[in-house]
Length: 367
Image 1 (cartoon, rainbow, N blue to C red):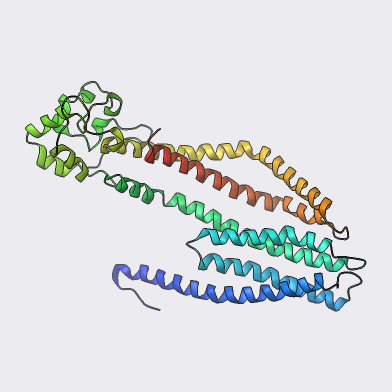
Image 2: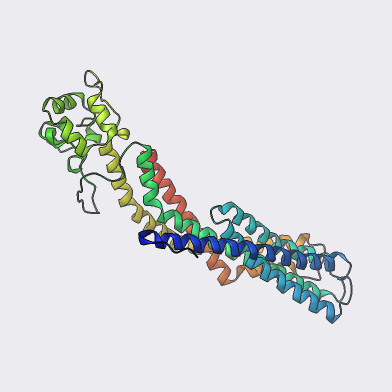
């Protein structure tokens, strides 16, 4: 293993470990796919080879039990390896989840149509292990989805910085300033405000934020002319404004009272929006958690009703009655499965709400 030196050592070590983990996972995935296909072929042969149409001897039951265990282990391990190998692409993991759903819902129906006479025990074995394999795959995929959501929230600051760069603004103000978290700064309190003309700025004198008044040091041509005439241009602009702002102030000015730029393109207003998002973000998270608490009993009833409806539908359309298909579907209504489902549902709902707020505040700037 390569050893990094100095400050880059930890990063190099992390890359090496990830490379080895991916390489091991590729090997594990190949072995898992082979074991899964062999066990699947044996089980399908048992189903469609006419071996479930009468009494099944103990040796065959033992083989079905073994192959079912191999399938469940291969499905779980293979899905873990697949998630690691394709860790940058969540769509592949979702595809594995679809395969898990087919195993959970498809095989009980498939077996029910083939079991006859004394083969019910064999049908139960096949249904149990194929359903377990599907559950293992769905659990792994659910955890992968949860990680994607948590990672999206964790990377929110970097994403906001990228949005700021796209809009031509700096990631952070060049001068530090402090505002209590429970209130937003006024435009004259921000480092992007040009202090040289603050006393003559109508926003400052009226104590009204410039984006509400429609006038300010970054958009009023008269104030810009005043700033340039005072000779504060070069040093002040280099210290307090971005390249985009400097080009506006030193370029062609607009005659009359027409603003030189819209608020959505002003660094002061965009800093105001970033403050607003930092204030709203934790409030939205708390509100989402409270909302999920109130929605819990309603969603619980809907979930139980959906499971019952699906079980009744499967029972109606199953081609055989030797294997109670509805019993396997009702397994999804267990407390553990329900809690896992609700946690994933809650994380998804929260992530979409945060995405909507980010879009409305930082990109569209309609809030």
